[in-house]
Length: 233
Image: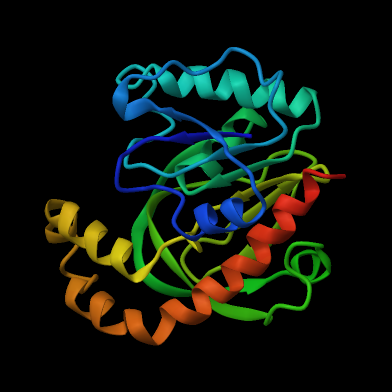
């Protein structure tokens, strides 16, 4: 398994514990340390692409973006299970041929998403509540690529989960975060939060974390474990 991580503070979170329990030791490409992105997915059983503050449309500033899209396209051709989170989701969508662009507002904090009918029947999400709260940190969004299905939506952004084929999932939101990660992200992204303080309250996000984090991680464990099960199929 290969994991691509774009910034130090956006790691695997609870996914790391799930991998340890399964005895899985992924290789990491850490672009913030100037690691090179492989040109082929050969040798890997799955790909997980994490989040980051950069935009998919900023390949001129971040050359690794083009390299990752090339790698994801290789994974699509070879039917490799892939999971994209936030920026990772947007990279997969771009590799599938759709546009990624700035939304009207940012989603930062705790937001409800609703499963679509396709989402309710999907093997990763069936049995979960039709509506549940997730942690968001993004301003970009995307259209549904041709041949793909939208599995969930929110009030601000209609495309929250995109599924391609049988084993490729793009999640716009974060189920992997721990309470400590939420606090760290707020500390690290202070300037960004100041720019949206007219409609996003960082103090409220922290205050609400204890009410949401346990259930968030419970849902995350179910979904991530089901994704990891796809590796064996």
